[in-house]
Length: 321
Image 1 (cartoon, rainbow, N blue to C red):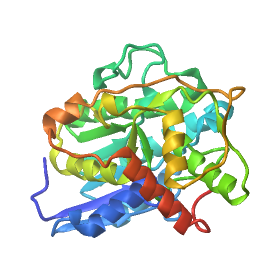
Image 2 (cartoon, rainbow, N blue to C red):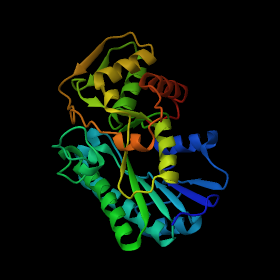
Image 3 (cartoon, rainbow, N blue to C red):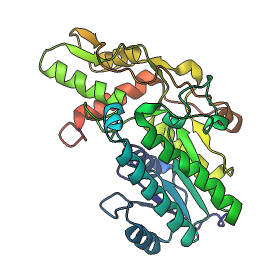
Image 4 (cartoon, one colour):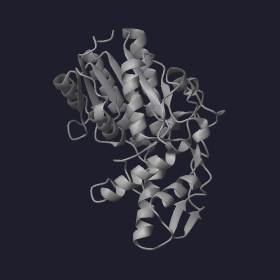
């Protein structure tokens, strides 16, 4: 089903977000191959919740390959508040993108899932076979079920039409161009923004929660390289977890310490234990990835945090916050 090498037109939805920008950078820095035409689109180009607009975009670009990153996303507190919105918008986006890709004859689609889709009650480490083994965490069930449905839809397109529509499951992604909003962003960019503010106002840093939950963080530029590998080389419909190893899991407290160190913050650090911790851990196994790419080297966590903090400081005015 693959196109002959040298005639790939790759449409990236969600092209202006954290992962889209990282893929753009990695491609521009030399990962793109001759004959690959990369087209990055954002919500400014089309409203993907609208079937007609999505179809028109795909008719115009006529991609042979699609990396589907577009989604309605938010941090823990926004998810708790708007589960219905997260469900409806993401289901519409995903159905429109997958079906438009099918209708224009795209030979491969790689969609982006999230580790929050896994069952809340589970054994660790989590692997790719466990996605549908029980309900997700109640805090963001709308988003989680919408993302799970991509996997269901991929299998159905394969069963009915033989399409190579697949998905990747990254762990906690961070890096330049993230959403650094404190109320609504994810934990690491939220911490970076908080440290920046605490430093500039000479006040204490307050970390929400106990600091005990553990997460596997993946640098967006590492994830971008892996996405490109999946697009070119990975031919299973079954999803693949893209993550650092279990041994590289860090606590929120350790993540906060890495940010404090990177930003040279010398103030007091306190933990507001009245705030929710969310899931304690969601340790994922990257053994499937390692069977394919045993030698892939991830950027060390502290170095990636340093680079992200530097980007945020340098781009403070235009960063999403």
